[in-house]
Amino acid sequence: MIRKIIHIDEDKCNGCGLCAKACHEGAIEIVDGKAKLMREDFCDGFGDCLPNCPTGAITFEEREAPAYDAAAVKKAQEGRKMDAMKHIHGEGGCPGSRMMQFAREEAENTPASAARPVSRLGQWPCQIKLVPAQAPFFDGAKLLIAADCTAYAYANMHEEFMRGKITIIGCPKLDDVDYTEKLTEIIRSNDIRSVTIVRMEVPCCGGLQRAAENALRDSGKFIPWQVVTISRDGRILD
Image 1: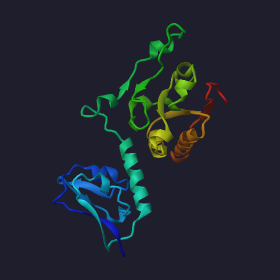
Image 2: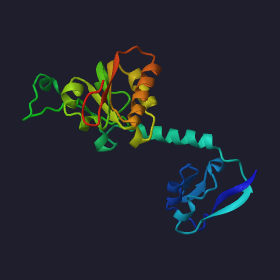
Image 3: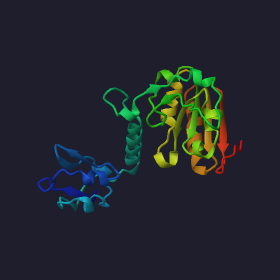
Image 4: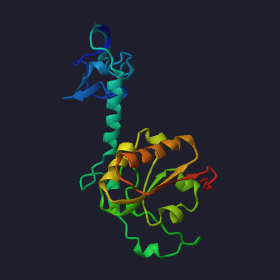
């Protein structure tokens, strides 16, 4: 079909990459220091990349090109989001994502007090996007899947929910991702004894609950699980 599509003048391109960042569809990539239109069917012809090009290397043209494939773009975008969640944890990775397990045996038997609270976080990292799908701390674990805000809304989060559990947290609204695949992999690949889902009462937290429930179903395992909802003023609703 004949349609409007972008044209990249490689002689003018300085390889800055601003056009690739501006292209939400992922049609443009930097190859050998030059911007290239990698997927014509990913280019919607709206030209979000044009105003970001400092050298004027991008223009519109009308020519024979495959139709814009919105479904393929969406699938690729979801794939990139999942790739971003699969961090490499090792000596060469980000120090903040390095896997750690904390010895809490003594602390488990130490009563907390208002004067000296005790952390019940059993491992690092704890973000769903950062935690590896397979890790020693998941072996025989009682898994707590908690929305980010719950620890701030509910004052006794560590003692009542985190104590004796492996805690992973996330926010489906801020992360803008479906956690189902990652959570399914965690539950399927490890000896998880139970799952507790702690969410806020706000509707967007339903995404975390749905992802966890879907993961439990898709894992093919029968594991005891429960959902606890926290109100915005810090009360347990159910």
